Length: 228
Image (cartoon, rainbow, N blue to C red):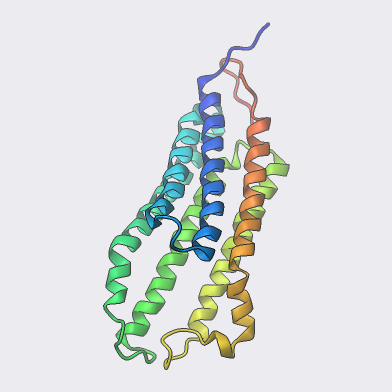
């Protein structure tokens, strides 16, 4: 008998595709702004988070096709929304607030130093929330191979970002109000690797999502919902 197309499955596949588009846009936007900062409008940076939220919402709506996926999809979407909302607040309110400390004493324990540490912790928390949300969002609807790619790409970048944040705090130079990269070759190398690691890990996640989307069945039997 011919299978009946399940609208929930179609929404899930569309959501995975939108997630891919968002990550690809972020991957293209980052090197362009780093190499040619005056070329693109900075407001375009919000396209990637909007696509990420839209894709996550579609995957969440499609959760009805897999009953065991409903709870993880709900928690995943909630974490992504929380992370992106926090990042938006950070951009509109946190950044101007931190800039008010420019030109003030930068010694350890000073208001500037406290704001510096808070900024790193806030940004790292946002990354952690979004990363955990993406992993939970697709955990139950991906098979082992694409899941490894998605988990690997996300966790490698998160570990790298957290390591850089921790080193920025540990190696903080009170006279500079930051890290003296010239005196820390290893830290400079870590910072210089940001763009390559960002692109490589994004490529792993995109490949995982593409394979996961390809393996999602085009139709499902009514009343039957089995994990992929």
